[in-house]
Length: 587
Image 1 (cartoon, rainbow, N blue to C red):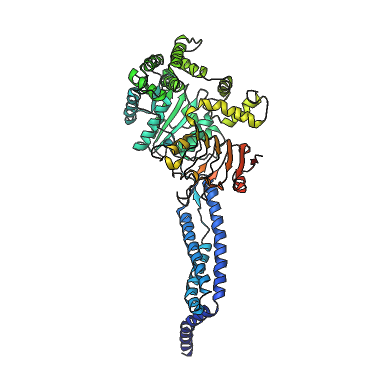
Image 2 (image 1 turned 135 degrees about the vertical axis):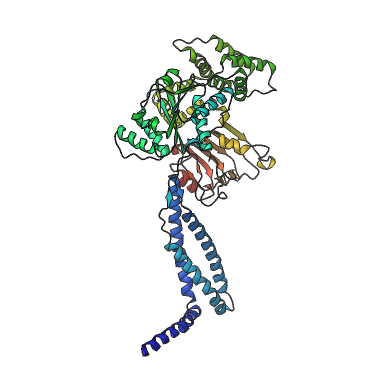
């Protein structure tokens, strides 16, 4: 019994005395509480920096940050802001005549914030931290330049009709080279994905000399399959197992000969889970592979004229004589989309004499050992080649033929081959050689080169002049003496912005008000903007106010050739050095 009373007495003492002791500490140990607050804040800031670094590393790997991490960072940001305000109050209290009374009420808040920061610091280990996102699938391919003409609409409807027939396993889309088979196949894939006709739509390029491993790898990437098998047969079985799980629409593009589906890993028709659309120039391939054949016809005269006008920039206001010559040129293209686009783009912006000369060349061109079905496209491509102004761009274009079919040719690779073969920079420095390369490349991309001198932002609204859109599309951008509140290159990148990743050369001269290249701070806390991924040359001259590249934490810059970056008279040179490294300062 005594033990019971003793236990009850201890509890009463605890409940009575502990609050008294705690409040006594509030009065006597104010400085200790402040010291603990500072220590907890420093530790949390270090942890915040570590987590932000992890976020940057993960986003560099294109991974998606888990929501719990984003929420933690936001909560930390809010708490640290509140602590900063609290530190201001502490400073004011130390100067107050009623210091003791104020300290008593303030120390409670200090204790709460200290515990909150300790809790956040303790809960800073996240598992998982991020995840690898699914590839965008067919939505990766742009529909910007695709138009449903009469021929493509007819072929699309026929493909859709065959797909609805559950007994059809393979569909063969055939047509001559340059008729638009690949473009239509991609658009079919996008439409089927949007309509959710299949759980998965994937595309693999086969090419003239099929590589089983390459085809398997393309399919595996889009299906999320990771191979542990070494042999082609093992990989084929793994792919086949995956394709049997969900309904899949498989597009095999540019098929030249009969394919062994079993060797690739494509299930047999009996499984009824995988449907195949292949594109080929040869109707015989469709027969050999037992496909339902669909022909992609050439463009009608009306559709051909519409396509040519779009690429040659012909309008109703164009001179009558020019439109007359243009009509004849379109007739020479014989309804072949690749020929129409090539010739139209080549002649865009040229005078009537140039058009007459082009028409004459199209009439007189003679090609040997070219199949009849391909002669028109070859003639039009040759016209585009002949219209290159100097020998260097012609040599560079011919140099592209050494690369494998469907190979993505990078400008830097082309430069190195050209330099090694003596096509570029036979005398002078590497810098001069690169500029020679840029000069040769630039005329081939006139719509991508932009030079602006003395633009006044305050005198021209962005609604009346889409300068931002021009910047985003440009490959060569030369800006001189920008005025009118131009404190950044782009005021704010949209979340879906392209980050100027098309840009190869950027030159900024005497933009005295510009403080940073990108102001991305308002997009969102964790939005990462990758920029300058194709940048080869950057020139910054007389930029008195430039003090940073990005006005946010998460934007990243990965120029391809950092040695070709020049700087002169920039406000914060050290910051630019850190961002680009290997920077060479001009005398």
